[in-house]
Image 1: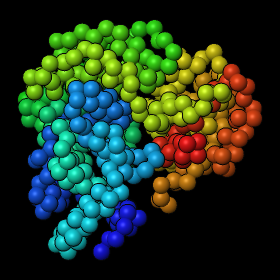
Image 2: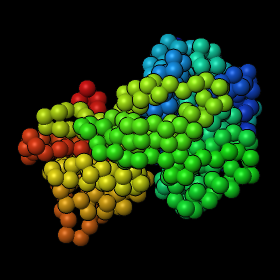
Image 3: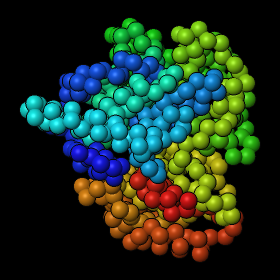
Amino acid sequence: MIANYEEALAFIHGRTKFKKIPTLKRMRRFLSELGDPQERVQGIHVAGTNGKGSTVANLRDLFMADGLTVGTFTSPFIVRFNERISVDGEPISDADLLDLVQRIQPVVAKLDDELPEGGPTEFEIITAMMFVYFAEQPIDLAIVEVGLGGLYDSTNVWTPRVSVITTIGYDHMQILGDTLTAIAGQKAGIIKTNVPVIVGKLPEEAQAVMVQTAADHDAPLQTLGTDFTTTLLTPRGWQERFNFTGGGQYFKDLTTPLLGDYQVDNAAVALAAYLDYHRQTNVPVQVRDVKTALAHVQWPGRFERLNDMPLIMIDGAHNEPAVTELAATIKERFGRQNVYVIFAVLADKQHAQMIQTLGQLNNVHLLLTQFAGPNPKRHATTPSELESELPDGRSAEVFDNWQAALLQATQEMSSEDVLLLTGSLYFISDVRAYFK
């Protein structure tokens, strides 16, 4: 019998991560044994290479501004596991998490005995816990983030009111495929018959997959830049400003405290999905509530300030598309300052391309380091390997641990300089815990 919170987490994390053959049959059987809780949950399903977390945060705050109670399912966590299953931004309690595991464990044991490939994986168990919890809570809707891909993701046994696909880029290629068309096909797997789809700015070949898949499922498709649009305005302070047109609405001078043009895209995609949800439920939209909600969105680890003097930030740019966006934001926001970048990334990411992108920024001082990965099979790239991938003629400082890199950077910096720690989300989680 699982007796406490620590044992509950050990049970979850002790499960296999993947099975050899991807399928949703096991997940459907699992949920059937639990009474199909997903049938009692309504909401919005969010997939994409990057931008999922920020889009979920925008949606959460938009619906909370309506006075609704909103469940969110996200991954990975930044500080504590419980963040993954939250209601109105409050993580599930240790006691509720323990109760869920105690109830689900016997079903897992039964499936371990009965299924040839064994019972549910780690993520399938967490997904089932989420559906059971949200079905029993007095929530009005859930915003559910896909774990990986879409087509065979364990959240994809659910039919939402709106499907969202934020971005398509190269990540998890060993699982999702090594072309944008293949990756887009996996993400488009969340598109359901007659369920509206909202998509962000996608590469042409990825967009073609969305158009075809949506047509095949009679799913109304809205695309950022075509069916809804934004106009960037001059930023003031620590925020982005923009106008939005779409869903029969025009919003003037919206703001988001999440930095980067791509965060305007994320906010716009969230707003389009929110407006479609309102259209389906026939609830009027309050302009003031929309403005207030977007202006106060918080999402840890996205250009998040940890210190003001000097300015120290963290950003979870954990794959090549995210580093490209990060570089653009550094140029636009901090192009006239010296920027110290402490970079550490998991070995299974496209770190060569990431280093090349960062190495092309003239005002950046690179400090390369490493961190303890989430488990022995997923470890960080060594700093020496990162150094070997620098552009020709570019140098960097190399440190065996990130705390030494942080100490060195803060000693070298002036009060006018900027320090950014970035790379893996696991890395910035460690850094955030250190500062908090």
